[in-house]
Image (cartoon, rainbow, N blue to C red; front, side, top):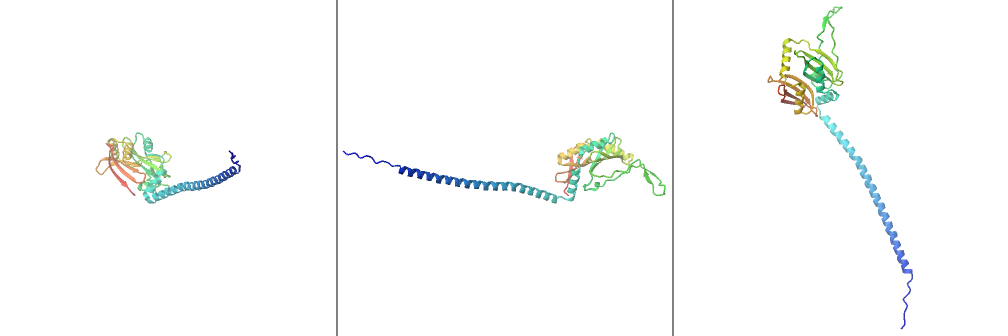
Length: 274
């Protein structure tokens, strides 16, 4: 029996397989590199777009905010702008002004307090200068009209100020002016021309008022949030003693609230939309 030896395997087919495998690897690597390059480019583009958007958002927000402010300013009336100007320049609060005014008159109590100065829209803007009660007249050596001597001229207002009427225990009223920026007393004088009946009426009102001006201001702002700019002790149309309190809200509208001077209850409210 004749045996046939198996044919010898040469290395040629293996080398072909290796070469094919190598070529496939090269092609795969090239494909991967190409894909990576494309992804990198895409990420860069996306990052650039995101960066541009990030910059655009604050710009749009700032523009919208400016537009809103401009629109709000355009909708404000002259009175509202005047109130804003006045309150923006005022540093001394209502309560602090009350304390300072009462401290300027021995045993005194505030019966009226009003914020005045540049920007106030009502007639109280113009400060009324009252002559000093110690003023006396002496004839002029030239024969001209008599001129006051010993008078202390009222300092002209240079900024916002609190003007208070402070009553002593006997009802005698004093005018006290306070710088609304520094808090210093500008002037403190007794109101001229007060007779016994007027003093008695003021003293009686102070006795009837169980609520202080600070308590009335708090009752008003509890009802209507805002800044107190004025308060006055007086009788309303029904002859009830009330504190009439002015409050300016965030929209620069003015609200006038009547607070019962005996009970502290808010009895009425009026709003000035101008």
